[in-house]
Amino acid sequence: MSGTLLAYPTNGAANWEAFPDIVQRLALGFMGLRLSNMANFSSEPQIEAGSVVEVAGGIYQFTNNESISGWSGIANDSDVYIKLVPSGSSITAVFVTAAPTWSVAKVGWYDVNDRYIGGLYKYTSGGDYKLKWMYPSRCDDPVNQEMFRAGAARPLIDYVLQIGDWDMYNVTGSDTKSVNHYLKYKFRNVRKVGIVIRPDTDALLDPVSPNKDATTFHQCQWTYMDDNIIRLNRLTGGSFDNTTYDQTSYNRGFITLQLRA
Image 1 (cartoon, rainbow, N blue to C red):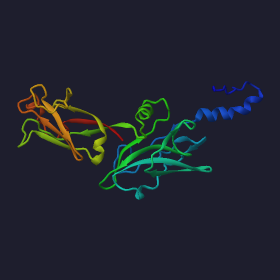
Image 2: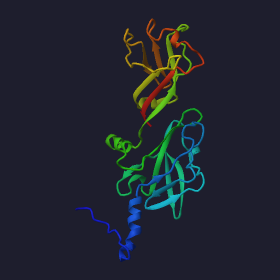
Image 3: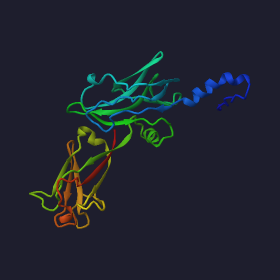
Image 4: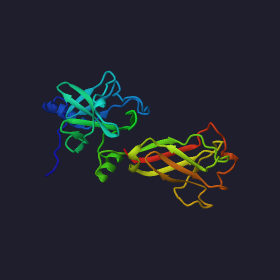
């Protein structure tokens, strides 16, 4: 079995009748839309006005911000998806917990004719909208490729935390820093941790080792993570134990967690 050529119409030729079919096939998988409030965990994401998306062969546009229904019916501490449900000439967006599958024929993540455009995590406390993400529109996109290899319907994403205030010199009773990550059970989905420390001058960034053994080489490390915090430890007498790192009311650095959303 082989692929077949779609006849490209020439000027004045009868096969211009095939042109709409060519355009429709080229549009398969197209997703020119964006969600609002991506960085605001307390606010509902909406499909932004001006978005255009292809769903099961039809092309839909949103002239106004589109709210997504179904959030109140989803339990806290749930992985959530956003899908578009076509009905005739209109289309609506809804939050669901059922995962999609990749459709080769439709070039996208689908449940029959309902297209999935992204997802998020409904947090345990207060039902916040956390870890918002969107599917890429191309099957050859590295994000899609990684999910295909892993057999997963949710992508690996980077989640960045601020370490916050930490005087690493004048410690009081402890040389550790606990940073809340607000992920609850999803901390088990973390696959990589990267941490950088900012000196008071902010002239450079110092990397932090994941090694748990406090040696003269490992001046600071993260020692563990549970369902509430990631714990950092500063070695007494090490390179961070000096006045270059004692400023307060100052974000001491960043923690980047790569996790399965």
